[in-house]
Length: 142
Image (cartoon, rainbow, N blue to C red; front, side, top):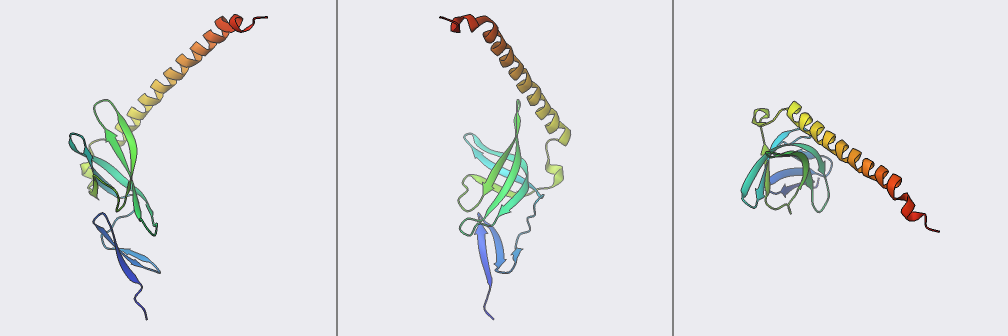
């Protein structure tokens, strides 16, 4: 019986892969809460995230992590595709108590963003209607 097991490493996270099935040496699952450490121009920033998928590419297996990037005036959902070529990013398992925000906080911030964008759309629609009503004579030259 031939050996069908192989160990692969994705940025320090080792996976034991059997050609018939895969067994993680370090347990990561879709839905796990993780911390994402991101290098920025002024140092490092730690963000809360969750694993949303695994891409089992032969050449570059990848862990897909969604994280909340927040600061004093914005809150955004971003993605990291974590693999052997990922630079200036680390991930580790986190405790749910490590979250610095609540579900309601994120939803409220997104609802505020939606309201702002709707107001911007309404303003552009007013300008369009003004243009149609007041500039139409400019295009009716004989």
